[in-house]
Length: 387
Image (tube, rainbow, N blue to C red; front, side):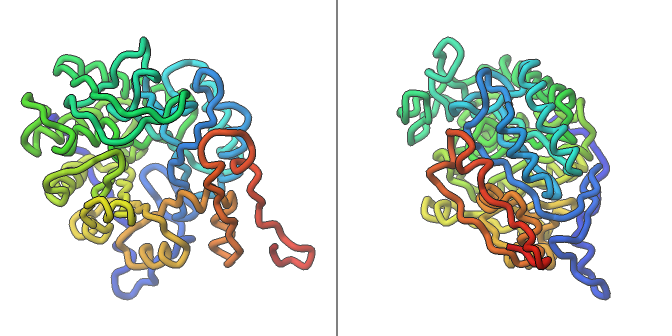
């Protein structure tokens, strides 16, 4: 698997050993190269609000600046190349203009004392010819059409049967990841997260429901791990392991994903990642929709039983549930999606028991400031309390 060996960092789960107070969401934590002031992470959230040329602009700068009190911000998924595009108006990281736009975002987050990583993304088959250069077919490990519809500028359209990538095309995609990682450095990010979840390209290579290849990248579990690990190693040629994370969705069924033995697949993947000593592994737990569509529940505690590095968990956590999983030592960090979307100052609200704004699904995707930068902060009252 062309696996390099890096020294693993110990997980924070050791803090729960007898005689020590369990950590809280507000216990500081060294995660890789980053001294985080809390364990509350802003999850990657696709919002479809990039400017022309898929360039971050003023509205995006303000959106991320507002949320800089997170211990760590993970950017919305960001395509590494034009072929990686799967949704309207999502940002890229392959042109100088995109780098400059992201630099304004990271400068604003850093000015507020925050840390931010860029999520590297290629959607693979979860695209549509209308979104592809020259209206070409989307690419995938195998020519298997996913069920469902693509989000396009003309509205929802049926997914198409993708073109299976030839073996000799894969080095070019690895190079696109490597170059995107370089551009993330130029854009001022503190690191990167590799998107290996939710039915996108790397997840498609990993699972046998979407990978029916007969070359060295398909068939056996070892072969299916090969391309995701090669991409990781390409990124590690740019960034030290202490500044790289990866996201996995072991229980996920999003984008018509399935696997004949997800427990074996993701156990092997996580064990293969441990020697690299990554800053963190980001595990998405099963949602109700995943269970309804046949997903197998693999909770964070299962992975903690054998992975000793930093684990981040995501799965519609609220404050009490997040506090409990951190105190147990099963997870070191919790990423919040919709709660952070609607509550720019989420850490303060969770710390002080403040009321939570309700997310507005009508404004999740596309549009302007409404439902993006206009959610109210929880401001102090004149008597010193908050409102």
